[in-house]
Length: 84
Image (cartoon, rainbow, N blue to C red; front, side, top):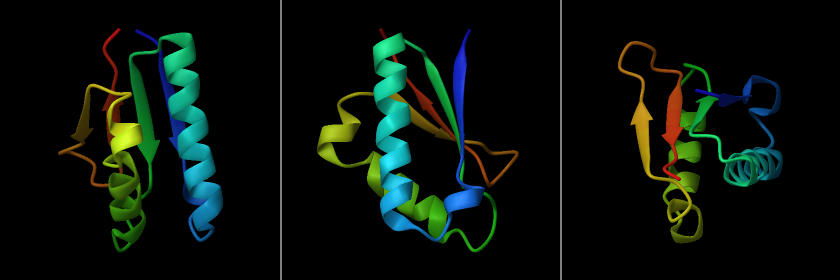
């Protein structure tokens, strides 16, 4: 199974760039029919992870994917599953 990975460590403090990258990777997954995206906000204080989760729950974004999975073994990872 193919997956895409988005590491947000480099742009953690640029809100607009984060949302642009999230939009880009979701669009790419839908276009290429990739079933899994791994988003790495990192561990830190958890603020970036909260920002990513809030973004993913927006109505226009939420309708594009099937479900979100927070990695129970690694706090700094989020999986977005698609169903085609």
